[in-house]
Length: 328
Image (tube, rainbow, N blue to C red; front, top):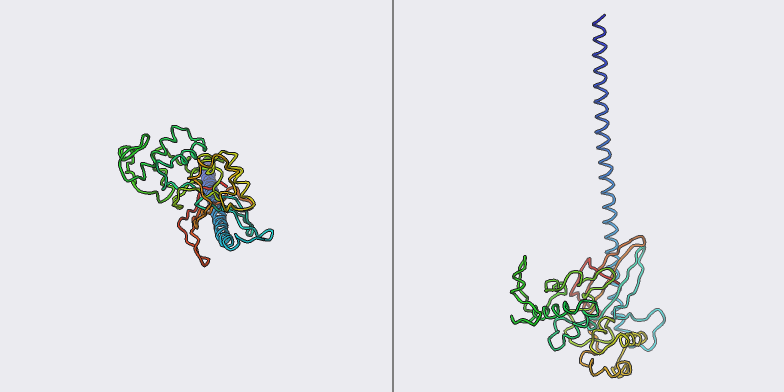
């Protein structure tokens, strides 16, 4: 009688071990299945995000191409006495325009480089306009003096220090040392290498636009085109108050300024102070900012391009950044 009992216990024990093994196998299979499911979901979301990002990029590129087309249209029609409603030429003062393509939409603006401050032509004699811009963007005055003097030291050919400037001695003492360029800026992004200028200052923070929107290295002129300058640049011109800036912008809503005499009443007695800083002539170099988005998208894809418009409907890119930080 003892032997059958022992056999039954052995069989029961073996069944228990088999059950545990089955449970362990099921557990492992469940973990593998859950891991695979999680990995698949992650890959799916990544693919969808990549697809949507690519679509937004192409939509932003469509905005760039539309702006170039509008520039050619502007050249052909800017002097037309009568233009049909809906066929108006686009402004080149940073005015934002919207367009639709399929399920996507884009916001785009064009700014004539002549309406910006060219940092390569800033000298001690005309640096007031650059100081005013920084002050109007709420940068403390002591920082403004450092930044402007350091910009001048960065691009001048000598090793002499401005009062608040910096030369090789400062930059070579940094954890990652480098020397001053002692030449003109090639791009505005170089500004972050200059003492006192931060990424936040260059590109802006929140809704606050950065200095990159109001500066250029492509105009080659010290005078600001009143037809193209954004309000921030107008207000940086010595003698132009916020009220005068608003009046200039309101005046050019309906027509371009063809002669300074047209707005002499707007400029008033301050004209003598601002006269050496202003002009009404445009250039052939434009910066285009475009943001592409989907109807369901939360964040758009930004592209910034600078183009030179040539004759015979030809153009040439001199700058292209994708993606770019853009605030419209």
